Length: 206
Image (tube, rainbow, N blue to C red):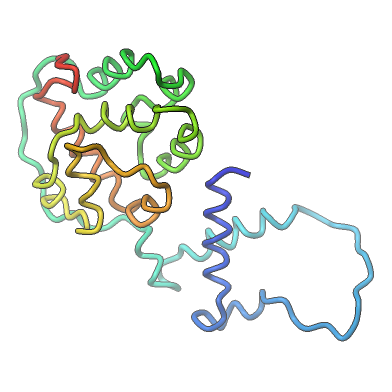
């Protein structure tokens, strides 16, 4: 079972906390007076129910807590810049091409800003974190190890996620920390791309 499914299960477990959401008492196990006879399963296994329940819980109209996982209004725009050299994705791929110690499959799948989105970042981490220095090196290529703090502030990134913006010493690779910043990751990625519009990548390539 991959990390995404674990996250969905944890999310479902949160939703089923009856102290916070009494409605979900409907889904809590009840005390039984005796044993239950075996039954033949009909339909999908329980993990599909957990995934559906997670999707239901993300409805912010019913559960405002899950606004954390919904797109937020940006704090402001970014100034236009004149592109110098390749577009950001080209500079990112050129950087990844020099990562001889990084995993080839991870570079092929995720060395692209379109693949490093809020929807895909957990998949990237769960797939590549155990493959040597891959995650750290690819983050360096994406972030250029530059200080994107001002850009992130302009876009309204929450203060607790600024560690992903000030990347001069790299960025955290702990998967659990990403859960709290998923909502802001597309903004952070936008800052990485904006920087590469008129700067070289970390290897000095335009």
